[in-house]
Each structure stands twice: as structure tokens, then as C-alpha cells.
Image (tube, rainbow, N blue to C red):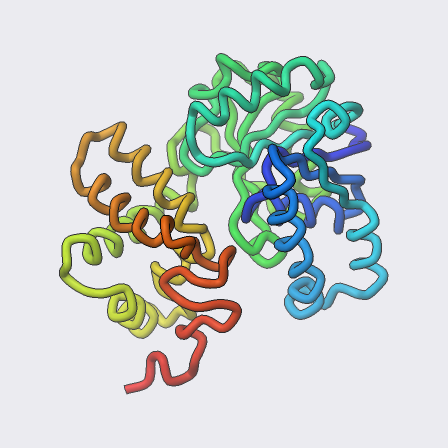
Length: 298
């Protein structure tokens, strides 16, 4: 597949990262979002990436200049989507928002455009009834800090043509991802099928008053020999995203624990403590407490 233009629908934490990675990989890339405020927020996120790319993957000044020149942002959906070869939906993890996004997209998308969802829990069969490009639609889920954790989880509905699967896999390689093919639909994909139970166990311990986020993270970091704990990961994910995921679990299971967790998280969200994106969540950024050498010392 010849990729002429990539569009990211939603400039949140992952949307902005996917867009910058695409631009860094040499493709003209557009971030579309619904308001000037959302676009301004995406611009702030994008502005932090050059330094991180240079520190983490030794990106050159020339590569950064190329990425910056390839990237644009807009609130005009028609101009964003016109001529796009690949469109990646990265809107909040709510079925109603995704449905509305696809319906708004329908008048402007080309018949042969590859349409991908970055959903972390919803599977293609849950979305395909209202997507405009059913034969060109599938999921491609990315991890946070995409330039370091460069995995693309690829999953498709039962009737998706092999040509679409092949195009998605090839596109992932073109933006320097390692494609991981998931051959049967599963909510949570591979990484979150392992990751979210750990996160939910930590959140449950906190929400039910058994321990506090700092203690839980210290325990996990020392016991597992890792550089951050569950609540550090939540700050990177974004606590607003975590609320949507927990409410999704509640709606599917009616387990009151998920509602209790969402209510606790919402206290932070209402105070604009969303995590890395706003400079404060469970920790303070850009220098979170868990990165201090004394954090896990005896």
C-alpha cells in the first residue's frame, strides 16, 4: 500500500504520539481534534516529543526537523481526511464517542483508505457495524511512549480481507513498529490482557482502603525489579482514560468494585489531576517522585 497521508483522529496522549511517530517516519500527518482547545493541548504534547526522541532513540536534528515539517493540526475534519491513505481513530474509550466519530467521518473518507482504531479494550466486531470502510477496518493498538515501546497489536473482525490485514501489518512496519498479530478477537488485546488485571488489582487495593498508591508502587517496584509501579503507569495512561476503562468494566460486569474505583479516580480527574498530561496525577511531573533514587531505598 502506498501511503500518501496519515490522519489521526484525536490528539490525546496516544493520538499525539502516534501522529509524531508517523511524521517522524516520513509521512505527511494530520492531527484532527474537535476544538481549538483540544488542538492546543495536542500541540503542547507534540512540543515535548523532539527532546524525548533525541534522548531516548538518539534522533538527529535533521530527523526532528523532518518530523516537525510533516505534522499539522486542524479542527476541520473534511480537510484533514481528504486524500488520506491511513486514518487512525484515537478518541476516548467510549462506544458512543467512537460511533459518533465514524459517522462524522463517513462523508469524507476514501473507499480505499485504511481505517484503524487504537482502542485498548473494544474489539473490531463491536465497532464495525457503524464504520464507513468495513472491508478496510481493523484495530491497531499502540503502547504509551510509542518511540520506545514500539509494538503495534493488530486485530481484525472475522470477515476482514487478508489484503487489509497485510496492509495494516506493512504500515506498522513503515512507522517502525513491531507488528503483533492477534488471530482471534479478545478485549484487552495481548498487552492489556496481562497489564489491566495488575492495574485493577492495585486500584482495588487503593479504592478499598487496604493500602495507598505510594506503598503499592514501592512494593511492586522493589519486588518486581521495575522502574515504576501501577500508579506510575496510570499517570502515563491518563486518569480520564482509566475512568472510561473502569466504567466499561462496570457496564459489562455490574461489579460494584469497578464503579468504586472509577469514583475514586474521578476525584482526581475533577481536580484536573490527569497524570503526565496535566503535570500531576498520583505523582508530580516532569520529575515524578518514583524516579528519585531514595524512593525505593530501605
